[in-house]
Amino acid sequence: MDLRPDACLIGGEWRSGSEWLEVRNPADGGLIARVPAMGAQETQDAIAAAAAAFPGWAALPASARADALRRYHQLVMDHQEQLARILTAEQGKPLAEARGEIAYAASFLSWFAAEAMRAYGEVIPATQADRRIMVIKQPVGVAAAITPWNFPAAMITRKLAPALAAGCSIVIKPAEQTPLTAFALGVLAQAAGIPPGVVNIVTGDPVAIGGALTASPVVRKLSFTGSTRTGALLYAQCAPTVKKLSLELGGNAPFLIFDDADIDAAVEGAMIAKFRNGGQTCVCANRFYVQDGIYDRFVEAFAAAADALTVGPGDAPGTAIGPLVDDAAVAKVTALIADAKAKGAMPVGAERPVEGRFVPPVILANAAPGMRLLKEEIFGPVAPVIRFADEAEAIRLANAVPDGLAAYVYTRDLARSWRVGEALEAGMVGVNTGAISTEVAPFGGIKMSGLGREGSRHGLDDYLELKTMTVAL
Ligand code: ADP
Image (spheres, rainbow, N blue to C red):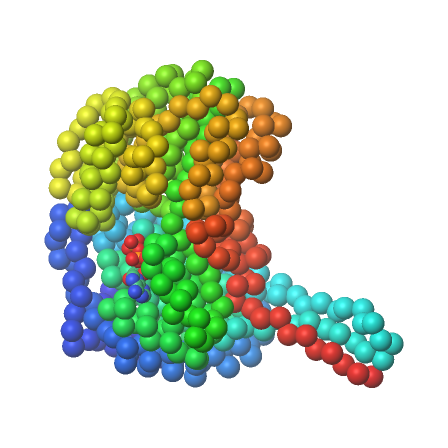
């Protein structure tokens, strides 16, 4: 099966372009592919194809949609290695992480295959003897997905799977850096027997495609994962047509370590929460708050573990941290490090040089308010560490940002884990763990980190409408 059509999927046809976008390997800047640079017209075509396919797909019994999603899951896992190699080539992450992402991406297909069967309605006791009230769930209609480059496969399936399970058709716009994984997923959707027009993929100018998707009255739902700035813009663009909206935006996750924590476990969790995908995930720990009594020991152990990470191309054996995605990312991360150092932050451990897009891990002790990297999402392998005295101070510092996606707490005190977990302003809290993402649990944020939840049984609701049927006897 050719997983590299390098063309857009519209109404079941692979459509080439007249203008092109270049896809480059972040590790060496080499050209990997050219993909169509499409705009508003092609997006309209994709919306029309999705609208044409919607009634037939929605009318299928849920079990038929579930069968298709299960076949799709199997095909993704059968092609895990090829997909992982495409993903690493365009995104940069270590191959082992890419394989993991493909399995994670596939997990949404099997999870929502099962959830498709459970879109139960309800019967409500009426207030009048001659009335019966029922609530049914129906698909919202044509959905749109705009996805980022940091998880080129999983951010697509986390939207596509619940959409398809609910009975929606979908138009997907992947990030311009990582369209090839999206195309490969499109090929496998076709191979799974998902009908033409149910899944459409367009690449090109984000402003033109996003503008057409948000302005269209036919598109009834937008699910976006990306920056808070773009999410807020799309929120406004969806207002005139009052679309349903899911937004998964930036995080600025605090990672709290109390004196009573298991220090080895805290370091292990910190490594996962900080350095997965080179620090380029929205749930990455952005700020480490460590209590006085354990601070020095934690910083030393964390720096030693970080120094042991191998930085290199994602497809080289042993690589733990790949390149950052592009030159703009490198410029931003290095500027944040320089700002913090100028304001008194102290690098701990080996200071390895930045080479091209390869940014080695940096642990910065003595971080303090006023440093940019405490206010902005770093999206790189940099860990600022701040000292705190007591629980109240830790909670105050952790919550002092407009974002609220993930947070992490390390303590062996059960009561404290509940107190702090409940007080943290975040959609997800990891207690004594740095790994919180799974298809079975709701993923999403509060405050400026977004709207809605993905994954879990709640993820299906984002693609369903409730309809109340009141019957007079
Ligand atoms: P990042 O900074 O992580 O690249 P973005 O929010 O810019 O985050 O990108 C996430 C997704 O949003 C990508 O698919 C990108 O092409 C898309 N995007 C960026 N700007 C717009 C826009 N104005 N309208 C629609 N989509 C956009």
